[in-house]
Length: 335
Image 1 (cartoon, rainbow, N blue to C red):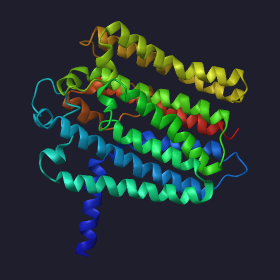
Image 2: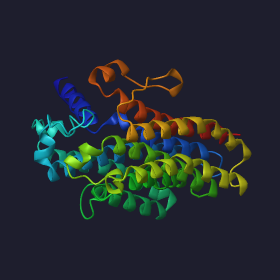
Image 3: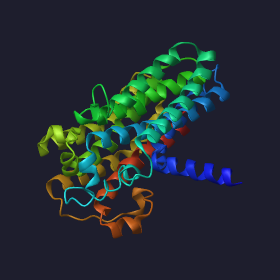
């Protein structure tokens, strides 16, 4: 009984610090890929479920890997939790390392275990789908480590948002789709590009609002690299309209059926997000209130008390747009 309690407490500890609440960012695209793969003749429920679980393991491992390299690069800066330049959102990052709740060796063991579990899932799929799945595994592993660690530290050179968009969009969705169906299609490629750009926009919105905190730990996000307000807003505009442009292309070329046009009902939300980012960059003192039609925004009372409501209202809106895209396209895939 004591051993069981200890195991449960340990699992909860690592799930919390691996930021399990971020899992929908990977599991929703994975679920969407499975819904689209269900329309193929060679669809396998068993392999789809294994791929879904494998995505969760790798996502958690990647989050811990990011913590490890961030902490190793910026131990002193991250430990100074009360610096004025550190935003409330960033406070608490790597807190379990700062407080010595675990050692770096224990963290590495947790990372390796999660990657091992993900690799076992990939190994099972490999036995049925062949060597192609290994390419997805190697590329995912490379970018997961290179995002904040060696050899390139991509997130410190303005490529983090693009890389994560690529991982959670084309790489993840094509990999899951192939695992479940054993094939590829133009439709899944187009949809994966749409989801990848939406994920990229979530991160870019975050980096715009967290630019000073990122500068304080010498993290060159895309917003930090662009520097100028005009360039940041131009990038935000392009990321806001890109999903609709690629969607239009897919419908015109008949890779996607006309029902995908229903997704355009989300265009007003994307315009609103760009407007709010525009106001944040040029008039950060302006305040906006949460509206019910913006979608769910969890723990809002606590967020307001913490004084981060103007940050989170934009982040939640960007996230909700991505979620709505996934849900609408998942439904349309059955039509």
